[in-house]
Image 1 (cartoon, helix red, strand yellow):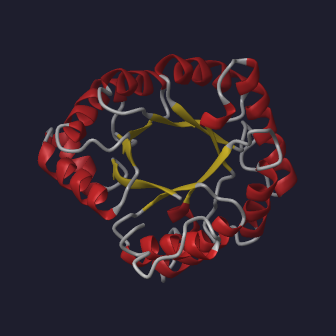
Image 2 (cartoon, one colour; image 1 turned 60 degrees about the horizontal axis):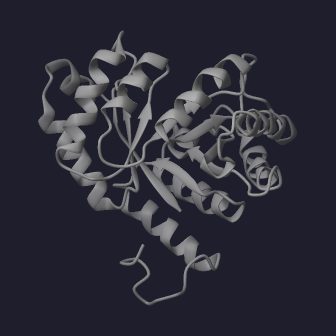
Image 3 (cartoon, one colour; image 1 turned 90 degrees about the horizontal axis):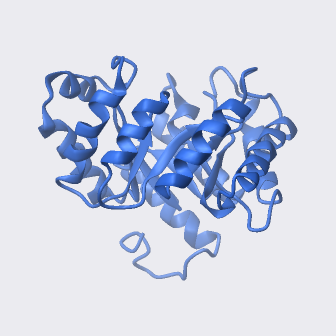
Length: 260
């Protein structure tokens, strides 16, 4: 299970303020804390308050790389922001977050990912939005897989995100996401990986940690490979470690929490 730290994102007030002030200290503190907590990647997003992410993303990447070697997930809704972030990466293989199944998006994102040797997240949605059922989600995932194959992009470098919605407004989507995770594993050989933005499931709900870690265990049993999460939620990280053992993905040890 690959855990991507979610906190270096301008959606969070402390990060937005640090970006506005051009203050590296809060950003680097988050990078160090998330890495220590077990993040395999760090999501880097300037957030919606930045009109021109291409001017900020290189500073953000450099600020993080000054203190950790953890690979970065470059996250921007704008191609110039993604390109600037990818060009600034100097240490480890990056990930791109993310394209949709729209042909125009795929035509832009696949060559960019290929040129930079980056992993790529593909969202199971198009201009009509997020499908209601697993069949339609899997259909869009297949469109992404076909486009990737046609572009010569390695399917094993592709991560399909079936898109988790908040349980308080889209409760019926939860089982459909789990079924999509199962179906994605049948789309190709080798199959694409799967990923979710886990915290979305509990957005604006009480008992967020409980909802997050319960859904994580369920999703792992359905074939989830990676998740963008709050890695500083110790119980959540422990749930991932226990799930790996119970799913026979790692050899059991009494110290499985320390060996996560």
